[in-house]
Image (tube, rainbow, N blue to C red; front, side, top):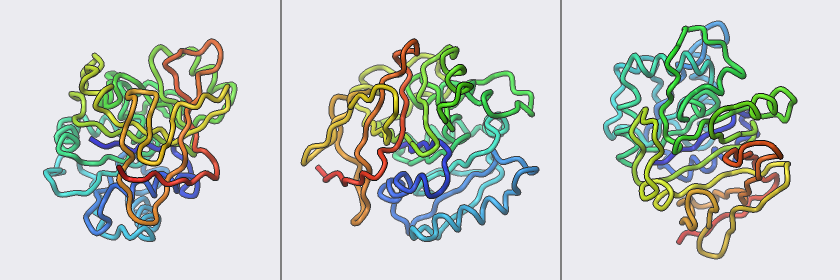
Length: 286
C-alpha cells in the first residue's frame, strides 16, 4: 500500500509532492482521477478534469481517465494510481459508501497500488472524517463518519493555517491527528492496508514495523527533527525506526523531512507537518 496525502495547497505549493507522485509511477501508464467530492455549484466535473490534465500533463502523465460513478469503477490492476480530488468530504464519503469503494480501494492498495488524495481526498483516508466539520457543510446528512481508516487510527486535518480557530479546533479534538499545512503532505508505504472501517489500530507487525512512512513537512512550534538522511537510507522516528527511501525517477528530488512536536497542551499524538522550504536533497536508493 502506498499513500500520498496533500494538505490541499495550490499546484505550485505541492510540487514536491507531485514529484514524489511521479517517482512512484510509470507516467506512461493510466491514472484514474476521481472528482466526486466536488460540488457542482463550485466546479463541474469537466472543469475538474481540465484542471487535472493541465496540472499533470507537464509531468508526462497523459493517459488519464476520469471516474464520476464509483459503482462502475474496476480497480483490478488497471491503473498506476488513483487520484482523489478535493471538495466536500461528506459528499465524497457518501459516494464511496454507496458504491462499495472502501472494499475496492483496499484490494487495490493491498495489491501494491498508489492512492494520492488531496484535501477531502486526504481526510477520507483517516479513521473518521470528523475534521471536515472545520471546513465543510454536511450537505448530504451523513451520520456515520468512519473513513477509509488507512492511517493506523489517526485522522487528517487539512488546510492548517495557524489561525486561532484552527488551534482551538485541534485542542478540543477527541482523536489522534495528522495536521497538514496546505503546502505539506504525507507519504505512507506499507505491505498491506488495514481493513476498511476497522476501529482498532493495525498490529505493530503490520504497521509500525513494516510500514515505511515519510512525512514531507516542517512545522513552527518547537522544531523537533524526527527524520534523518544518510547516504543510503532515511530513518523515520514515527511508525518505523528505519525505512528505505522511496524509489525515484532520474531528476526527481524530494525535500528533507522534519516533523514538529505538538504545541503545549495539545495531544502528544498530534503531528504538525509542513514542507521544508527550499530543501530538495534527493535520497539515494538502497
